[in-house]
Image 1: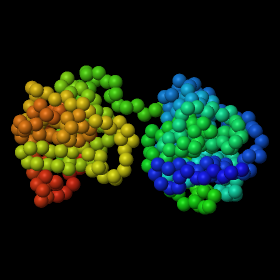
Image 2: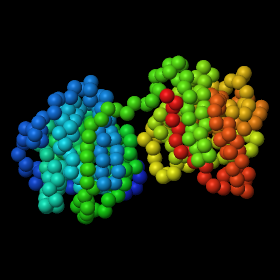
Image 3: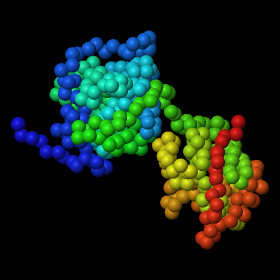
Image 4: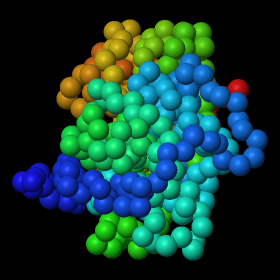
Length: 391
């Protein structure tokens, strides 16, 4: 039989796994000889079955030694696999198991219950919990972030509890494995797991433990469908110089207000900084790059650019809350500014969506902070400690 050459080199972003490595990546040789078992739940009280309607509103939360990631389900594409996975997770089946095989920036594989026992020989890693489910292949492509069921290549209906996550696109796997979910948060954690040192068989030198795998309600985007009255809110900015209260005006700029409330409610602005202060002009903040830990935030997936909502009547006077942007009028996203003095050159060109109603003494303090040689960057960090919606 003519060999099939690898179509990409391992470990580079955007590349995929060589098909010849599937046998060693996904299964142990012993698993191919494992007897077919009924899809029995873990010992103990069996959780009630989940309906597919309910599954569409749920996410898996995977907490590991290296961090946490979440993924949603595709109930219409792989109903039996999803019902099995959720039942297992709710019974604690995955807690204490591990991700044991990795291809750098390719895939990560886990969920074998044999790894709960630290005495399990390495040669048996990946051989447990197979031969349990019929295949449910679909048109879902194995792109970056797709979660799929491990099976024995070439053996129909040999999937089970084990699963893998694609760190980069894996077109060679399309139509050969049952894709049942997609990462919604924490893709950087998945990628970090994939870089775990391995032996020549792609087994981790030290397996990455799954501390817990739980099922939680799908994290909905705050204020996504809120009406005007629901968005008529005040927001408190707690800063290292004191508090300020902003009154939002959804009549003036509803989508900017919706976006701002979304980011406030999700905590996206917390521990960012006011990075630009120009006396008599503006105090500006709201960049994710200024966040203290420099880590991605789960609400990053909701960050998007906004269509301009310019006002021809509202003026950029002291205390006005407006949105920063680039030269493109429709490029505002997260960065906002509070006006320190009349700025008529901004009128009708930037979106005003609220105003300062309390904390003018804090605004005065911000205006007076010491700045660097460029005249606008604070010498010492000015924290936006927390942004909260006023009850």
